[in-house]
Amino acid sequence: MGILEKISEIEKEIARTQKNKATEYHLGLLKAKLAKYRQQLLEPQGKAGAKGEGFDVMKSGDARVALIGFPSVGKSTLLNTLTSTHSESANYEFTTLTCIPGVIEYNGANIQLLDLPGIIEGAAQGKGRGRQVIAVARTADLVIMMLDATKREYQRELLEKELESVGIRLNKGKPNIYFKQKKGGGMSFNSMVTMTKCNEKMVSMILHEYKIFNCEVLFRDDCTSDEFVDVILGNRVYLPCLYVYNKIDQISIEEVDRLARQPNSLVMSCNMKLNLDYLLEMTWHYLALIRVYTKKRGEKPDFDGGLVLRRGCTVEHVCHAVHRSITEVFKYALVWGTSVKYSPQRVGLNHIMNHEDVIQIVKK
Image (tube, rainbow, N blue to C red; front, top):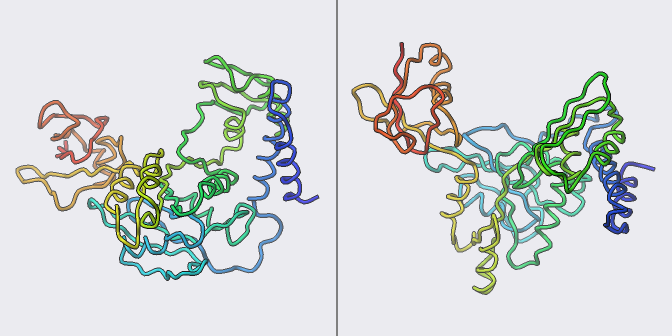
C-alpha cells in the first residue's frame, strides 16, 4: 500500500469515527499518523530525476506576497493592475503556468507580488503542479487568497484544507509548547494551565507513534493534540492570510456587504478597479511594515528615502539597516515621533520604533 492509499484510509477512518470521550485517543493517534504520512509525501524520495525548469523566483524587495487561488479568479489581472509586469490573462483556466513576479511600490517599500498558477483539488498530492505552487507560498510573508465572489463558500474551505495539509497555518500563532528531545531519562511532562483539549496520556501516545521516548514537554497554553504534532514536526509555517473576493460587480450589494464583514476579508473588482487602494493598505498592515526616516546632524530629515522595517523593530535594527558596523560605535540616538514622550528624546539600542519616526544616530 502506497503513502497516498494510507492517507486516504486514515482520512476515511477519521470521517467515520464518532467524536466523543471514548474515541479521543484513537482520533489523536490517527491524526498523528496522518501528519507523519503527509510529511513523507512532501519529502523527495528515491533518486532525483532530470533537472527541470525552475519554478521559484529570487526573493527581492522588502516583503513577499503570494497570490493563491483557483484557476480563473483574477490573479493575473490583479498583478497587471497593481504592477508594471504583464502576466497573460484570458477567459480560460490555467492561463498562467509558471510563477510570475511583479513589484508593488507603496509607501516607499518594494513589495514583491507573485502570481502563481491556479490550485486544483488534490494539489497537496502534486496534482496540477500543486506541490511547487504551495512550496513557493511557504516562502512568502503574506498569502493573498483570491476568491470568486460569484461562486459558493466551499472554494475557501478547499484552499485552506490544501494549505493545511502541507503545513501552512493561516492566521494562527505558533503553539506555546516547549519541546526538547533528550538522550535519556524518559518523558517529562508539565503544564502551566488546566488542560481541556489534550492530556498526558494523549501526548505520550503521540510521542510513541513518532518513536520518541526521551524528551521534555511543557504546555504553556491549552493547546490541541494537532498543535502538539505541529511542534514535534517543527516544519510548520505560520503565515498571515488576506481573503480577497474578486468580481463583486457581478453580485448584489447585500452579498458584497456580507462578504466584506467576514474576518480577514475584503471585496474588490479588478475589471472595474474597485477597492484597490484599500487592498494595498491592508497588505501593508498585514505585512507589519513601518517606515523610519533618518536625519543627519544639523540637517532636515530625509523624507524621500527612509528605511522600511518590520513592526516592533528596535534602534539596533535601524543601525543594522544603515550599516552593520554602526552598533559597535553607537553612543545614543535622538528620536522624534510617536514612540517617544518628548521630541527629540535620547534613547538606547533597545528602544522600539514606530511608523514614520525620525532618528538621528550619534556615534562615540
